[in-house]
Length: 289
Length: 265
Image 1 (cartoon, rainbow over the protein chains, first blue to last red):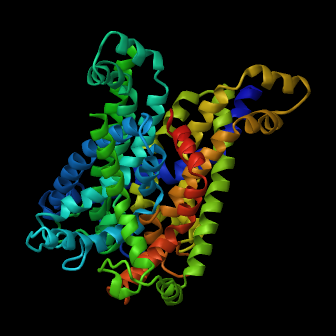
Image 2 (image 1 turned 180 degrees about the vertical axis):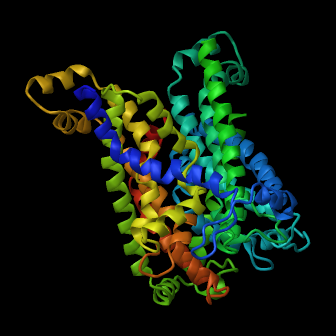
């Protein structure tokens, strides 16, 4: 090995060691542990084959959490992206008070999820929460928004949308600012409507940003469960249990780490699929350019 | 049409700020006004006093401060070295190593809670501030961001320094680091706000007052015997968000620019 190579590896070594210890090793160890029983005291855990996965197959809470998580992703991802795009278009234009608007949209992003979850918890409180007062004033019957299985998942989804839309707005804003103004001028000269210009020029130019934001939104919908811990603890009747929250409960409330590992493998498979889809989409885009 | 759009934008903006405004109202007024919006309601700091006295928030703030400082310092060193290797050195296995780094962008330590907890237990450092930070110190995001930046720096500058007899680390320190300063600021803000706000992992690894960050402290406080005194809970909530919120309001432009810069890949 020449000196360049040695220097390169030496520079990389500290970060690589930590990455291996806290990312690559745990991925491998999770898969390995999912085929074993939960270790008790000093005995090594016995191999149990697919038993944890059989338990999972029969675990209603797992299926409920998975279904919840898919619905949660289906609700939060498109809505927060669409709102982010609209916000960015507004803030990027010559609208009055756009500095204020940008601040209003972006502020939720920098607050801790756990703190905003507390605020929203109060907002949704039965009887004297702000939401109840508003619906009461409009003559709508009282409803326990977080306490009933029909509306609880929608309530936590709204919190996530509120928290994330402003964050994604920033990426769209950056992309919008890199579009040359001459394109808009040309479209105006040709007599294209604003909507036509957006649909045929702006939106296609934003495609890479949309892909980036989409991937991040999907990852976040499987990664962030802070608000679940604060607002519902997965209830009522598991109506708001998401996959990572179920893993947390199985692993750290019931201390069944082997089963938690099997559940984590499912989560890793989902994230791996997202990565693969992103990779293939990026590849295709590069080919067509 | 444009007028309608402006109105819609303002309505959405008002909706977006409403929960926070409501929190401010509750925190700065006596409890009997927390659910009653009366213009004559007297302002008070009493809720903050009571929250501050009811839980060791001072300690939580110190813990969070130590945590974000420690994580950021380690990230800056580790990511700079690794990014420099990827940007300017040729070594066998480089593409594979880079791909392995990028894995962490998808599979963050946030989802590997079970095994990381076991690892930290084996290291014997559970319930400590370094235990919260360790899994995040080698940040794939930081490595990627700095690598992209270092790659845009002209090689001539690098070579000029080498001709003067500077070694690889000296070149890094004298040429690359100063030129990447805005990116460091951007990464720093993103990292600090991420780790100040992080909750689930600190909740899992900490179990005592001496290591809990503010987010976990707030949860312990608000789910404990405080019951449903919303005024005090909201005051505590605003208190824990205050450092970032104040920094954001003071340096709004830099914040937004930084998040913009950190997001462009």
